[in-house]
Image 1 (spheres, helix red, strand yellow):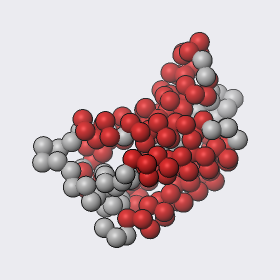
Image 2 (cartoon, rainbow, N blue to C red):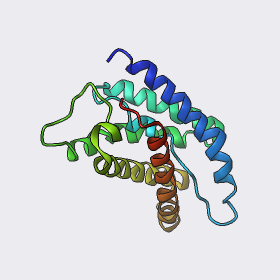
Image 3 (cartoon, rainbow, N blue to C red):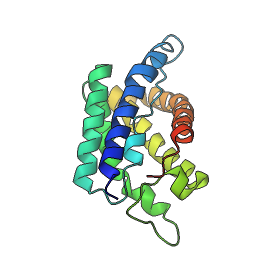
Image 4 (spheres, one colour):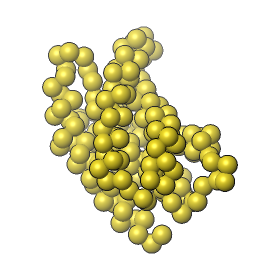
Length: 173
């Protein structure tokens, strides 16, 4: 598994570029209708190898989030949501663990784990990430209706992009 670091660096850069240069302008065009964000960058956190130490996962998530924040001019909201997503990542992995367990040398990809497993895992993680992101963006429980609506509108659109990326690149690790 010596090529895990270069693969994840390329994935980091690719998802960052996709998020900032392609999905950000698309998201901006929907502002008159309802605020909808197409978010795909958490896929980097989801696809980290299973044996990634927690400090490395948190630092990587922070780096991704802060760079997205710089592009979106959002003052740490993406970074905080990313770090929290990386922190809770072991829980859904534990809940969805196959009977025979995981091979910790691999990443939890669609190709390795299967479509059904990956859809469950990515749905839980993306739903959590979006809910945290919009909660931190609103920064008040008074706006719970708006937070839930934004999450519900953004979730299916973001999952479509996540699955498109996974089908195009279909990474093994």
